[in-house]
Image 1 (cartoon, rainbow, N blue to C red):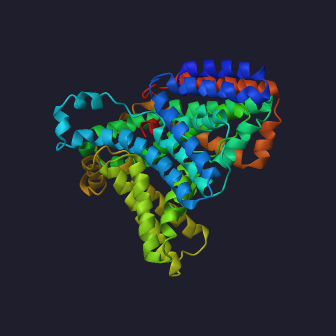
Image 2: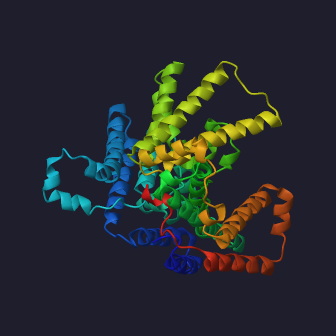
Image 3: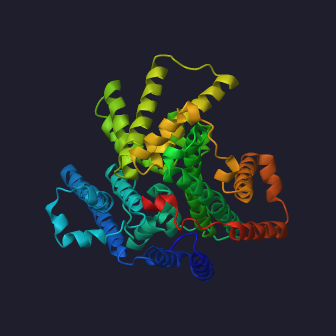
Length: 475
């Protein structure tokens, strides 16, 4: 089941109806039942894989929690990590790379057909990290193991963030599941607004941006220089809006039931450096990898060189987490190198003056570095990425002969796209401006309800269903 399918909202409101008439201490059961139904709606067989991951980490966490012997604690931690990484490596990497491994003899055997029929389970890159992080935190004595199997299962597979995050830490989510907050009209209204904005970002803006991107990718050699230059900006914008849309719907769905999920983005395009960008971008994934991968590696040495290589290796893992392709790996490596170079410059006192002019230049520099990664992120192969990069520097045909309006599929298309981007900008301004936000909050309830109705009307009247899923579903 997807957030952009009508049945999701039918079942969501049915769930809310039943939860309202259920005792607070039994609310977890309804949420867990719906989470299982939500995940198994399309491919029920992958529920077994989810149950296996939950059961392994539940058992390992209990064993780690009761054991006082370091060797035993390490053993059960290793069982948890090996099981989760084993699932992830097989389904995400072995199956993906199978077609390219021509030296595997079993390609000519009946196993080839069986492997071809295996589909990447939705959310596997997210729930394995969330579940594995839980056992690592118990090993580090940061939390106590959860003994209620149902509540732990709900922690791992809570439906709003199960498929594409945000990856929640146990300290944030488990206490909210133990002591649910009351369901209020204010939370329902706020949650619906977040859902509406998420659908607006996805169906009105993100899908239209991906239409343009697909045009560019289809014939990269025919792009004029300015189109190739715009591709990076379009790519990063589309990725951001698509993930932010999913996160908005996830947070809104959870808030309806009184549960607050983590923010996944903090205005990343205002970052003045590559390091700051990754502190603002896809925060839950970046923070997880930094906490559980980089810091354990870096703590073995105080050498700056060692830590620099550890940082580059960490960003290679971030690239690999997205997929086992050369563009993803190169994207990760480049971002790691950018941050290392920034750290080296800062440690040697090479800092830009703190002024509006130089901050604008730093912002422009960060934008260029981000765009380089954007081209790699959405290029299926290095050949396409190289063609786009080459066209940027093709000064002889930089402006080309294709009219902008024709490339953007007509005036109607560009009007909706522009109006959508302006709307997102205005909502960010209102959110950050406390005076404006207070003014909106005191408007009459009937006005807010009509505004929500108008928002959903616009979404379904003008949406384009060019894609059926969110981008991060493929990860």
